[in-house]
Amino acid sequence: MAQRLVAVYDGQVPDTIEELQTLQGVGRKTANVVCAVIWNQPTMAVDTHIFRVSERLGLTTNSKNPLQTEKALVKFIPENIIPKAHHWLLLHGRYVCQARKPKCERCGLAPFCRYFEKK
Image (tube, rainbow, N blue to C red):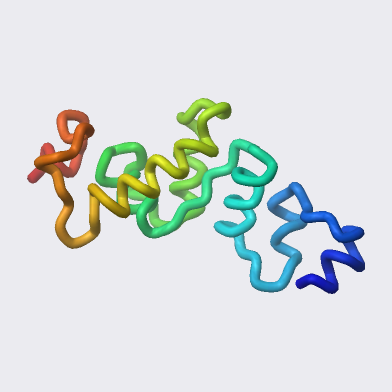
């Protein structure tokens, strides 16, 4: 990876998802994180937490994969907060809306949550 960064990109980290994905070991999720965190671009990296939380809250409906979730989220979240929204959803999924035992009783989003409503 480092050799390619030097040879192709003159030692600079690329600022597009497409260019980042040409680097060995960099997939779409990592490219989105780099673009959001380093370049403050409106990109949404979707991991298992964001995939789960988005569906539970009703931010997405029947998304089959992370790319569908990503496209749905960036369509409705204002561009200027997308890089922050990634972290909000990630941390919410990690600490509150956990996979096996969500902490709905202490969740401030419960009144708006599709999962909580069904539960």
